[in-house]
Structure formats: C-alpha cells, structure tokens
Length: 220
Image: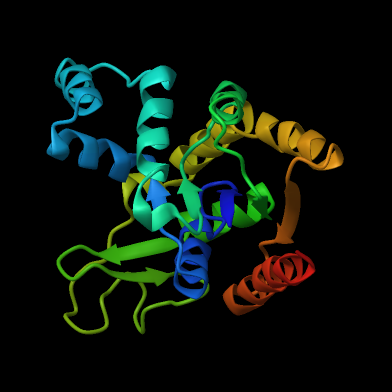
C-alpha cells in the first residue's frame, strides 16, 4: 500500500498519517526525515544535501527524488509506505512516476479555508510544557492563562491569522494543482484518488479513510 496524503496546513494530515501507519504497518516517510537520515548516514546524496543546506540553499527536486527512491527501496517499505510532504509540485509527482515509484492511493483531506483559519489562529500554547489550548474548541479555564501553572499563554507566529493565510495561499498556488493531476491519473486507472471531508470529527475521518483502504484491499 503506497499512498500520499494531501491537504492544507491544519487539515489533520499528520494525525491521520499516524493512524494509517499504525493500522497498516507501513512507515510514514517525511521529506524532513529523509534529509536528516541521509545527512547522518553520510551517503553520497547525503553529503550533497549537507553541502546545500550548509550553504543556505534549497535541495533540488533531482536530489529529493533520489533520496525518496533510496528510502522507499529499504526493507521496511516492502509492504508500502506513506509519503508526507512529498510530492509538493507536479514536477515532483511526475518524477515519482518516471522513477517507477507508483502510488496506489492519493487521499485529500479537504477543509475550507475559513475553517482552517479558525482552527489554527485559535491555538494558544503554554511554552514551557507544550500544552495546547484553543479559544473555541479547548479553552483554558481562564482566558489566556494556563490551567496548571497560571502562566500566560501565547499565540505562536505560525498560528497568527496573517501567517495562516499566507501558508494557505502558498499551498493553493504550489500544491493544489496536484489535485487535478492525480484525479486525471485516477480516471486513467493509474491510482485511486480519494476525497475526504476533513470537517468531520477526527475519528470520523479516520473511519472513512480506513473504509476506503480496506474496501480496496478486499477487492484485490
């Protein structure tokens, strides 16, 4: 089972990825993890990556696809894998296909922008402990104050509304074209594209994803 999760920041992809990883015993592979592992292993590509990062540059698509090829060829990927954070562009997606890293599923967790802004901008954090509250969905007993310590909660820069809107704009511009690309592949029978309503509860989203994946497994 080889799959990719798509969705805007705040859609809940990370949570669902963990559920899929545990149920189907396949590794969740993030691009960040791949880069760190390559650098630590001091592979030839890892040395290229380290040099690029040390110089403050961006890792090229060509290097990333080689790292993904290397990682997905390892023993723990024999039964499949879940790619997290890659591909982000059509060029990267085409590179996967050209390098015979074929996907079985692409799952898009869809949540409207207004709901995502509400989810992310409502977060408040107690920095010392990492406790996370939400002004609407999980408010502290006293507004702006940590329940246990009485210390002030903060809103991280990443969660400020302007930052959230910018992150969503980048997603729509760079990554959303993958939706059409993968839907076209679905129409040609090259993979299965699944769209999930991410405004449901976490458990409802998990159940719907599992139903699709289990149904497909039973028909093979």
